Amino acid sequence: MTSISRFRTVFVLLSLLALAVAITGCTANQNPAPQGAGPATPAAGPGSVSINNFAFSPRQVTVSQGTTVTWTNQDSVAHTVVSDAGVPDAFSSDPLSQGSSFTFTFTKPGTYTYHCSIHPSMTGTVTVTS
Ligand SMILES: [Cu+2]
Image (cartoon, rainbow, N blue to C red; front, side, top):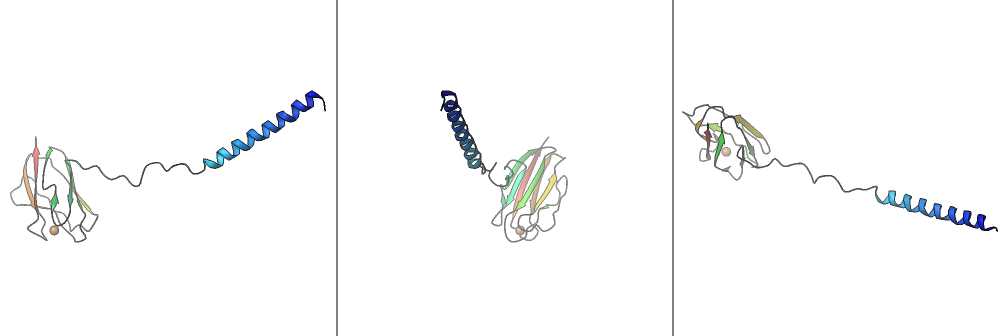
């Protein structure tokens, strides 16, 4: 074997080795970590009220005029979101089953007391600032 052919043999072997490493590397990367963990949960904020354990939570929120407030029922029983008489702008939801939401956009400043029409002891307040 000449030194050139020996060099060529070593080169081919090294190339095959590099190829094997590349293939193994690709195989190892076939299951990349999933992007993000599960569905995004809406961030709790001033425009977000949960209905939990027969209570509005938080019971009082203060938002600026034009804010849309979302109530989400997390109880297994139905609840409603109904404004009390005399508020600046009335609202009334249908019965919300578990996981359902009701939204209302507050365009008029003032104090809005509300309740659940099914369980009148459930009450809450939205204060809307101008
Ligand atoms: Cu209720």
